[in-house]
Image (cartoon, rainbow, N blue to C red; front, top):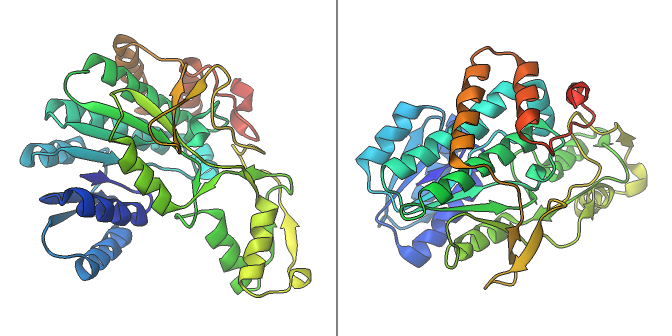
Length: 338
């Protein structure tokens, strides 16, 4: 079962890898966006053999009744949880939907996996969860902590694995498609900062390593995919100009400054944490991150859900900061809460 409201390419490639290696009898694909789900269905129907039963579901991971129904009606062995609201500046303006999907939605899925005896649960996280500077990263970090607490409480039932990585090349909203659109429509190419860097990875590599990690992971593992050196956003812009056979001197580049919640440079590991090698040379185990007990995380989510119902952005972000001591806002109205 794949839960996704970010990028249908991940679901498509994930299914391809699973089909080739495991030949599953049934795959359930859930997405809260109608058009991407429709496109995903068309691609899979055309390109893949009709051996595996594929079920396409339009809905949100925040819909507990729907999620429980999906779990109850199928014997599920694997959950690939890639669903998230992921746009940093958007969630700085709308923190509550970010909490509802990234935190509470994750809780609904993970609780369902326990209740219905799902064997494997892979949670896709982000490098923005490392010492978060924005609501998006904070919500993913809190979701990581919930997954971690569950893995200790239910060690003998569901195997919970978390996978961190940076920006997926070509995913919805990523910088490269944006640059191409700006250039093709003869618009100014906008850069936040000439010194800004980000980690990039190909979606095929992400999916391949996600599947590989499940071969040796133990419950509670938090893995980091080898990301290589960070890339300058300016160099990415120049590369895009070259790929479109344009003259760099004729392209107008505008520096707009870092957007709300953005860092100049991302980091991959918390300062108190360390990396250990695994059986795979491109997958590292993150050790030494701060954890919460099952009792603490349960009480935290109960309080968080109550605060969310009040629909007060400041109170929600303030509570996140009280739980996540490394959450320090940048270029954001929420800096006043630090």
